[in-house]
View (cartoon, rainbow, N blue to C red):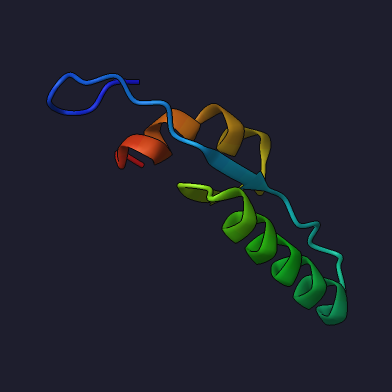
Length: 66
């Protein structure tokens, strides 16, 4: 990827997927784990993946054209 001014960019992205059938306690635990991973790994961007199409559209999400 390149920035608007033409510089190369390699974003550090965390993708996460949470099944719809998780109970509230699992959702809270998972959210805490994602936040811990984000801060400890110094991730630039966190993207929630809900379907296959979300994986295909990652570049548009990173460039803000989603």
